[in-house]
Structure formats: structure tokens, C-alpha cells
Length: 227
Image (cartoon, rainbow, N blue to C red; front, side, top):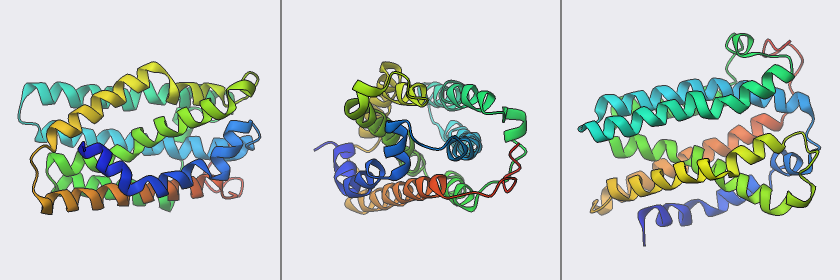
């Protein structure tokens, strides 16, 4: 069994909760209130800003030029490619990036990014990479679920652009590259390290679930300096 298959088996019940979450369900239906989506976008934009810093630490801890190139592409993907859809929606919803960056981090956002950054500072390359994996992997997992289950009604869905990005070929290709890299990086690890990496993966997956819970809750206007 590939190491990534082993990791998925350990979190598949948590990831099923993502698919059943009302935020995800209403994204697929196109019924999610735009105010909730706006709040989510701002927090996810701030999250991606901190996420990129985790990859920067991977760059520092890389041992080869090949690894440095790999993580350099990861930084670019997180702060340019992935944020492009966020920026498009945020501009339409009246909260452009310059305003979003003045907003407060929700406790959930801060907890999640602080967890990964603590591992980035203290951990080895394997630990850092595993801490980041639930983000991109689960978003692709969610994107394909939404595409498969709502493809007949996506035309006219306000959230189609978001769903398309996380289920499209480029995102698939990037994810496959990451999964292959994780399996290469974690070859021949000890049982002790295997357990450690599994726990990191589970914790990040639980942080992802809390992020969806945060995204769906009601937020008072002005609480996060939204316009």
C-alpha cells in the first residue's frame, strides 16, 4: 500500500464529514449565502498567505536544487494560482485583497496556520509536507465530489468557478505530483515515524473540518472588518 493510501484510510471518516457539511452541500446547490462565502474567502485568503510561508520553510530545509524547485513551484501555486479565484470572487463581493489583508484572523484560521508553521519551524521536511497535505488534497477531493454530484445543475451556479478550479486538470496534475513526492519522501520510514506522520495528517485534517465549521457560522457584519 502506498503511504498516501494509508493516510487516506486513516482520515476517510473525517473527510466524509467535509462532503456532508452544509457549507459544501450549499456550494453544490448554489444556495450558500454570499455573505458566508465572502467571510470564508477572506479567511481562506489569509490562510493561503500563511500557507505559503510554510512552503518557504520547506525551501530553506531542502537539501537539493530539485527539492528547492519543487517547493518554489508550490509557493507560486498557493499565492498566485489558487488565490486567483479568491481575488475574482472577492472583487465581485466588494472586498478586494487590500481590504482582505486588513481583516482579523479568526481563531480557527490562526490555530490552523500556527499549527503548520510550528511544525515548519521545528520539524523535518517529511513532517512539514504531511502537515500541508490535507489542504490541497481534500479540496481536490471536495471539488470532484461536487462536480460529480451537481454537474447537471452547475450552469448558473454562482460557485461554479470555485468548483471548477478545485476539480480541473491542472489541480489534478499538481496533486498527483504531490502524492508521488510524498510517497517518495516517505519510503522506508520507521514504524515510529509512520505513526508520527499519521498523527500530523489527522490533526491537519481536523483543522480543515474546523475551518468549514467556522466558514458556515454566522458572522456579525463588521466583525472581520468586511465592507
